[in-house]
Length: 252
Ligand code: UDP
Image (cartoon, rainbow, N blue to C red; front, side, top):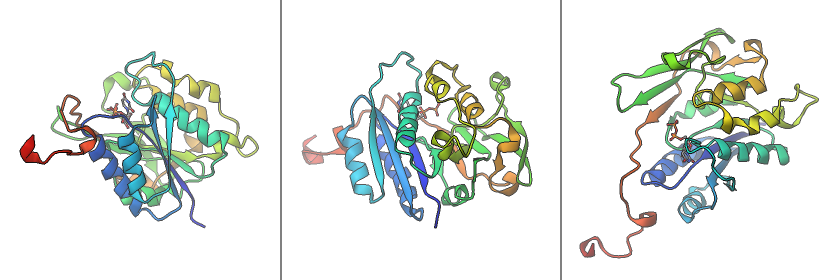
């Protein structure tokens, strides 16, 4: 049987949200099932998100996280934790992947993820409006082994593992099957919001694996970019509520 993929996406209402969720949902729809899309919002399940999910034609869960935000730069941390709790509580079995709504993913990425047995990682391309070239970040590999890391960001060099949030996936049983794997510290995972920006990925991964020997270079040799991390936010853009036009454009 094909391995289930559990794709976790934090999202929030803003001008480009419908564009992002449609784009991501349409890729996920092309991935052969079984695939579960766990979409998590803060405070309330918005009707905009609910409408898009309902129309997408894939298996999904629309979760809400109701924690008071202490850190304004949260960027989805609580929402990912909410999804992890859900996966742990319901003992969902599959490969977990954190797919932010605004990034771009190839179909091949999802096919490749199904090969992961414990923890897989691969290089990611970062594209920012302010820079005129892509920076690459992720594992240096020898065959299926991870032997080192590459990053261009000097500020982040102190990290143990140089992986982007969208550059790894892992077996969900790590979260709830202590017989199979050494149990990770879920308490620590829950406190990820207290971790300094830029260190969330490495702190999380340090709970899942002890070192590189427990990682799988995905695909073999990490020779291909399979997803792109974009920084193209347009937060201040105005747009019609829900992208609905109650009046004809002529009347606006
Ligand atoms: N996000 C969210 N609420 C926020 C900020 C971000 O749900 O207040 C989500 C966002 O939709 C995306 C993920 O968290 O899926 C990462 O956000 P963003 O791309 O802004 O962070 P970056 O990757 O640029 O650090």
